[in-house]
Image (cartoon, rainbow over all chains, first blue to last red; front, side, top):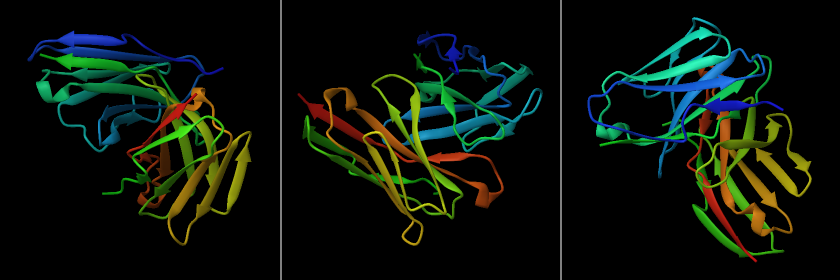
Length: 112
Length: 113
């Protein structure tokens, strides 16, 4: 079974802090994704990565950056957290030759 | 917006009844997927239907796709309390030359025992 893990289930940070959200997958998937989920807005894509060292902006990249130094790990970075980044963050991975995405359990981030 | 829309936003039924959720989308697609999300958890893939397919079954799930109307429906037959979750449709955006999935806003299903 594919397993996608995220470093924290719940996280509370203060405005202006630098925040790292980590995602690890154990199935050698090439593609990895970061989404945020907000009530009434569904899932919105922040960044994705086709492979190691590669990254592409999604629909809402402002205020975020990413890092993919190893194939199994995709990190989302909030350089200076703001209250409007309070959200549920979901990581997903996918084998490049397939269509199905496999999701982690999510990190609920609160920025005070 | 490319975003899909699910209908209804919320649905409450009794165990044993069927649940039908609809999804409309705006762009041409290669495939449409349905995902399920238990409260506060990640999404789990349920079923994928390709643009050249009209209907697909998986256990108690039945998905239909009408590309002329840009719509899909998910039917859960003989529902159980454990089916309580949010259900999302997702379309690939390959017509926009990307590999992104575009998710709808979801239908919250409540199944009462």
